[in-house]
Length: 286
Image (cartoon, rainbow, N blue to C red; front, side, top):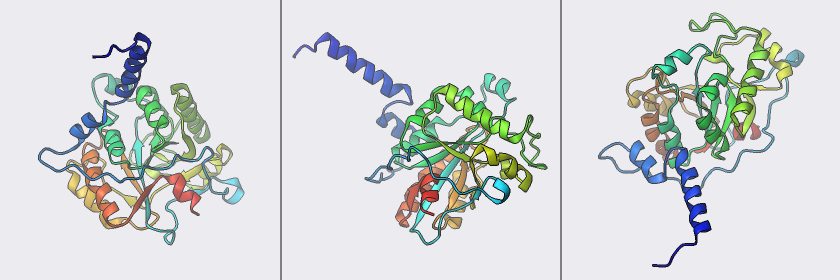
């Protein structure tokens, strides 16, 4: 057997360590995300194009208010954007220390295995809690990282029991972008999603100077606190239309069935002729 030169061996080991640090190799990911006894899900041949360096935004609304985007064009082909909220409030650190999981690495691994593009709406607190995962997601051209506030508090009340945001809406959004930068997150886009989707004209005006496009959705997956993946997949597949923005969650604690649901949703959408894209792709399409 030929002897490998020491410098080449060291380089090879370094590359292997880097490859496994973000969730293991492709075979281990597939093993973790394929249900026992089921056949592996077919993977699309083409991978997503990298998101643009400067992501497209919508023009400002009345009096400079942040524009609102809920879905793409219905007549621009069968395209759909899967979005995932990586939720964590500013006061949930103690719960994370006690072992509660606000991340979902298996979901990210499944999206990668299926070559399914997605937009991850991340809170600043989530990026601080899981900086390695945040960097890994941001560095992957399959994904783009958008802003879901720093604290995941309510920007308009009432809002599903969320406490009101402190210090102002714009300051909270900018604090989240700062958290992304500190964590080394790449591929961030100037999109913002209101916690709970709660907003009003006043807060849209306040966010105008932040130069973000507020992104809502037109398909609610119902994955929050769902225990079974079947109803989640059925809901998405029943409601999706060309140009749809689907909202799901990247949080094991609050959405334990999402990863399994995605294993059904992605191939079924492709069977129906849908192309999976990111929010930036829908906005760029008009």
